[in-house]
Length: 440
Length: 173
Image (cartoon, rainbow over all chains, first blue to last red; front, side, top):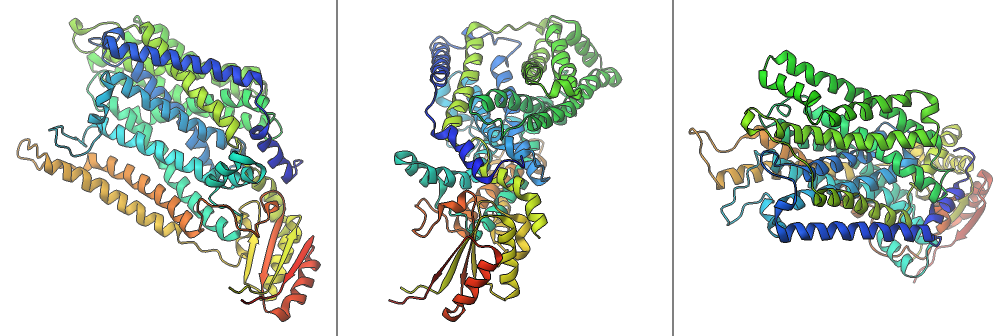
């Protein structure tokens, strides 16, 4: 990035904000809005007709909605990972991708948060699930993993928004200085009077460091807590101690894949190829080789644990998962999440946009299937043969799942035209690092 | 309202900006305000003030969050005292999860509010003397000094490579 002048960072990154949106942009926004409207209709239909319109029925009480919840929480992981952990380790390539990854986190967690409500059925009493002392004789049981989940995900959403916003303050000031009219007033409000004084930077950098230090263990904890929803139960396939690291690695894996899927078209559409360079995407792809290898190890350990435990239920369940009616999903998971990203170890795959995009899409689909295998299989095939049963999502569940993707992308599209998609200040800092060292 | 004497300077590159900071430090001029488009963490040793209360306030917020988390869990367990096998209704191990989450939540929010308060930020426009170039690619140093020091400071900053230097004499109302 050494050839880019400091002024160029402002010009190129802010151009996306102030240029007139193309017809293709409005067309996509309209298409996504139609998708969201269809999803809203399906949800309204489910509310009016009852949960029977969804495929959730005994014995599979957790279906596509909970699969989607875990999937979207996972997608939200790479944002804070890239931002917080890489910030603490002073990794330079972070600056090009961190802002969009953080935005992805916020929108993914917003999307995930809808699914417990959709799964709830009677959504108008959703506040009954909030854990607080009440007069309704409902017992807020803080020993329950489900209550941990509510607290962890809410904390994650609030801290992710805080971290995202804090990182954006200097860039919002740059946007304020370039904007006019109503937009200037909005940026002015959000920039909090930032003037780039040393007095502001010194407090800002400390606060940002504290936020990064707090967000890092939070990333690990949130998906661990989500995994406890399953691991704390006694079902075969769920009751295992490897679930927390397994879920965290999977979440980071899927999040990185989604970052690549979003950034490849975005850097072209917003003309940011000089700022978000191929080498930044390459680093993310290399990280996926690591997370894919961790997942591959976990996938291999699961049947080993079942065999080594000597537990007859674990053994029969493990065999059923690999060769039963959902075996296609199980083997697709292996193929998409372990074999496909392994190609990133080859330079040609991680330095070309088409294979990079295709592999990342495959990983995203594979991670959804992984959650399907984890959640549905254990419920469909537990201890007692007369309790076994299969689950198939209905058109309502499939529609709401597709609408959730539209909802997520809708917010991402709005963000890309209204907020700086790359951190201007941090990109400049990376650019100036060597100059400062030389000057000292 | 009075204004102190000061010399404002604008630099177009980091080497001259760093050179000026070094020379001001050698001359014992520490009453400075510095502007830069980036945080410049590598220059901490040259900056007039480096401390910040943000870390301690964040720590305090995090401790309050942890205490609140455990208090909420234990309080709820006692309020809804479901006694099983004669055991005390509260269990500390599961409450560590809630305690941890609230530690992070309160710590994070406190860090943001502490930064806003310490840096005196607020939903308002920047002051009239704000120069938007410091948000783009220019670096600025304002030296507050005695009126008789204005000329030597001006020369020092020009000598270091400042692109612009403006002297402002003290005024009183």
